[in-house]
Length: 134
Image (cartoon, rainbow, N blue to C red; front, top):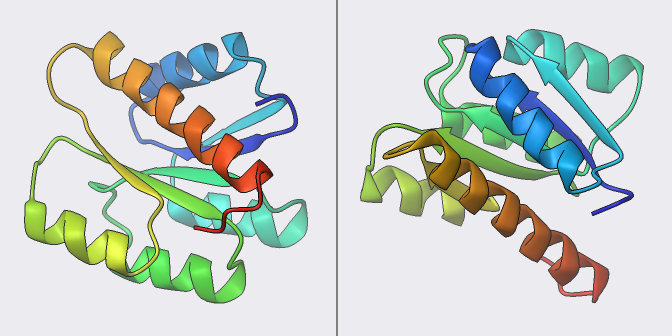
């Protein structure tokens, strides 16, 4: 995942930094952390478009579905991965149908779901590199 850029939208800075640390350990070239959706979207408009956005579903600014639609309409190649402590199968199905690349449950030990997140990002990156579109 050397040339991959990832933006993390997470209100818990400790969790965001742990995810960033794990991604940097897997040689991700750029990881930016944003506490709000507004700050992330502003940065994208002014600076650069990431390969991935990892967004916590419990952010108060906008619901996941509306956020996903906004990102996909402006930046269709950005892959969005949602994090949530809630395992809602209907919401999961809806987000995947609308174009989300993945949905990770923040359940159990933090190390376990962060490891799953990193592995899934590696898989999605390899899949895109081989020309398979999402």
